[in-house]
Image (cartoon, rainbow, N blue to C red; front, side):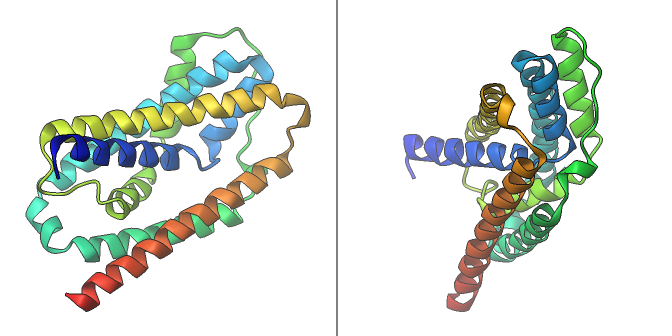
Length: 217
């Protein structure tokens, strides 16, 4: 692929990964939503920024860790994609069945403090290293780590991840702020299930694709 095509390849995959990492309504999602409802949109958005930075850290850790086995990835790309899709299926089922009320925490009312809220969002997300399994699954599913991609392509890819994550938190805080009078736990449960189904669909497509490639090889 040419330069522009390869940059676009990494950018849109990075954005998709950033959104899918941030979209599941786990504890940090509810913390962001509650801060938006209790203290205003800016406070919730700063919390999302912290979560996005933590996601980027785990993505960099995963990317640099797998970069040492590029030859293995090249030889076993279909198998890795198959395993990654299986991981996504487990995560999707978990998300679909999860009750959001169990992770919702009550936050004290205080003024917006950017550094404090960013740090809180970062630590809240960083404390859950299981996100690595989701990242590995997404990297495999979207073929994010491929041997013929140059270092500067990965910079674009990681920029896309940050952009996707920040875009998601911007959208969440915007909608919560606009719909604060109509927000309920049932809405969050529905969002969890919709996102879980989307992840399952991505995983199923990945499994079908990888099996087809293995059979035709």
